[in-house]
Image (cartoon, rainbow, N blue to C red; front, top):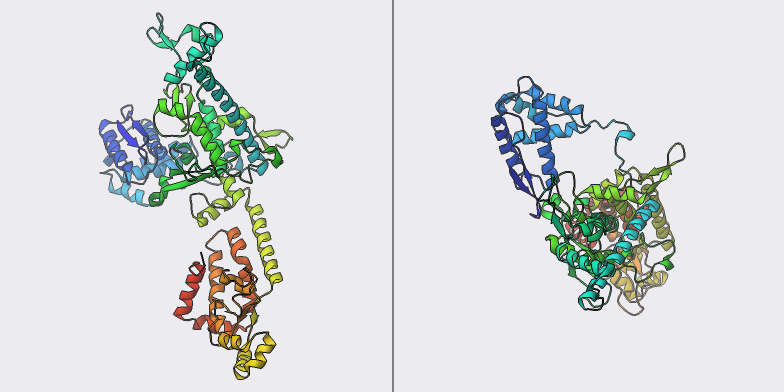
Length: 608
C-alpha cells in the first residue's frame, strides 16, 4: 500500500498493489518505482496525475497476464514487451501512446532495466494519433454567449431554489429553539425533530436491521422512511452535491479558473472592503500546483455585476440579486455550506451531501471533487446547443468546467492564472473563436489607426528650421507661434519630454489649464504643444521598434487598444524622413537613448 498526498496536503489517496497478479519481485520493483515517481519534486502535482500512473501499472499487469512467459523482474522486461503494451492498449483506448509515456517515466524511476530497454526508453516514442475524425475527438470549442448565459441561468435558478429551502428550514429550526414554533405532535413536530437531528449530525436517525442478510447494519428508521429519502431530508439544511455542482459552474463562469482550482476553492477569505458597506470584496487564496513557484495566487471576488452576466434587460437585475456578482455567489455558498463544512471537516467551500457511489464511498457530506457531477447537471437541466443536427433537431449541450473557462477567457479577452502569451495560445487553440477574435482585433486596429489620423501628429522642425531659428529666433518664433525665449530653450534641449519638446507645459489639452501637464509622454505625439526636432529621431525610432516587438509579446487585442494609435503616429512621423536617415538614427542611438526608452515604456516616467 502506498499513500500519496496532493500538493497542498489537503487530500490523500491509498494505492493498493496487492491485487496485481504479476510476480512478487516485479511488483515490488514497480512499487519502488511508483514511490519515486510520485515523491515530492518528481513532477506530479495532483492526485489526478498520480491516478494515471497507478492506472498504467494496473493495465501493465493485465497485459503481462496475457503473455506465455511474463517477466519476473524488471531486468527481464524486453523491448518487445514494452512495445507490445502499446499494441495491447491501442485496442482498448485512443490514449495508448500517453499510457506508454507514463510507463516510460515509471521505468526510468526504477532500477535494473536492461541496456536494450534503457536505449528504447531514451529513443523517440510514438505520439497520440491526432488524425482521428472530429466525431471521435472531444470538442474544445467554447460556448457561444447565448449558450453561456443559458448555462449560468440554469445554475442560478437551482441555487436560488436551494437557498430558499435551506433558509426557510433554518428559520423554522431557530424558531423552534426559541420556543416560537413548538409542537408536541403532528407533522410539524416530526419535521422539527428531524431538523434538529440533521443539523447536529448531517444524517437521519438510524436503527439496526434485526434479521436478514443485513442484520446489524444501520438503516434509516422506519418512521423516517415514511417522510422521504435520506438525501431529501438532509437537503432541508444542506446543499446536495448536485447543487454544489451548480455553484461550481457559476464560479467557473465568473472567474475562468481551472476545474481543479474551482473544486478546491477555500472557505477562508479576507474582506478587503473591511465590512464598510461599500463594494464588497473577498480575497481568496488559491493554489495551482502546475505553476510551480507561482502556484500560490489570490482571487479577488467583487460585488460588481460583470457585463456578461447582466440580463438582456438590465432593469430586471435588482441590487439584491446575489448571484450576478462573484462576491455575492461566494458569500451565498459560504453561508449555505457553513454547517456542512463544520460537520464534514476541512476548509473547502464546495461541500454537499452525496449518495453512495459505485467505488465504495458511502453517502454523506463531502467536498465536490469530480467532473461527473458537473456533466450530470447539464443533463438534468436539459441544456441544448445553438447548433442543430443535420435533421434540424436540437443537440444536447455538454457541460464542462474547462469549456466554461475557455469561454470566460474568450469573452473577456484576458489571461486567467497564466501569462498573456500563454493565454493567447490558449485562445488560438479554441476552434470556435479564432475568426471572431481576428475580426475583433482587426476592428480595434482600424479604430485606433483612425483615431491616430484624426488626432493629427506632432509638429516637426527640420534641420533647416533649426538653423534658421538659431540665426533669427524672433522671426522663426513668430512663424511657429512661440515666443523667442521658448524657441531658444526648445533648441537648447531644456524643454525635452521623451520624443519631442514641449512648448507650453501649462496650456496643454490633456489637463486643467494653468496646471502642469500630468499626461503620459506618449500623448505628446498628438499634442499641439509638442515639437519634434531632429535630435529626437533616434528615440522615436527606438520607441517604434519596441512597440513592434511588444506586438509579439502580448495579447493582440491588448496591443491594439494600447499601442496601435502611437505606433501609427510614429510610423507617420518616421515616414517624413528618408530610409537612410531612419537607419542612421537607429544605428546611432546611444546607451542613454536606450535607457530612456526602457524607463519610458516600463512606465517609470509616469506620475502616479
